[in-house]
Amino acid sequence: MEELRINNETLEESKISSLIESELKELGYLIVQVKINSHERALQIMMERISGELNINDCTKASRVIMPMIESNRLLPDNYRIEISSPGIDRILVRKKDFIQNIGNQVKVELIEKIENKKNYRGEIFGFQEGYLLLTDAKSTEVNNKVKIPIQNINKAKLVFSDKLLKL
Image 1 (tube, rainbow, N blue to C red):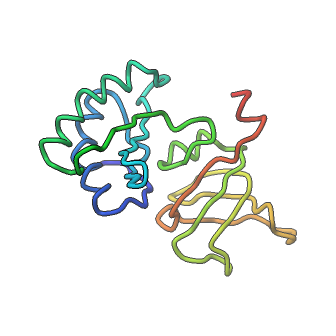
Image 2 (tube, rainbow, N blue to C red; image 1 turned 45 degrees about the horizontal axis):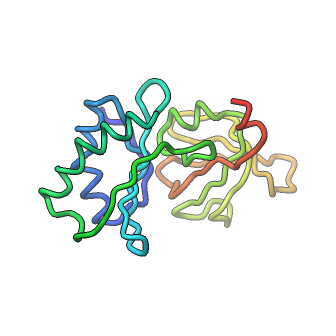
């Protein structure tokens, strides 16, 4: 079974994702995010290696495989460029494994539907259990400042840049 990937892609971005996802997986990569930046006339594809660190050669290899697919399916207007990159140090979290690997790190979470009258949370990840992100709410003044967020209710989750991330 394919693991859920949190995304807030447009229909066009979703078409591109669907087209290239299996091909990238065969090459050993996972899509993190696909975004069309119409202002800069760029298709931005954020990806990671299934195992190991992503490098410039990986980006080149992926680009050579997916560019013809995107062009032949006419999914972008002319004069668009494709940018392929890693998610970076303060990455977005899109899969269960991302949350588990970042237990103890600070994250900003934007929800689809409110929980406890809030749509935005910031805090430390203290676990991931049965489809729920377990978060310590940094802005809560309550003694029990823990919140349990269903992964299906997450629109976007992004690590907060910190010295701790630099030391990883």
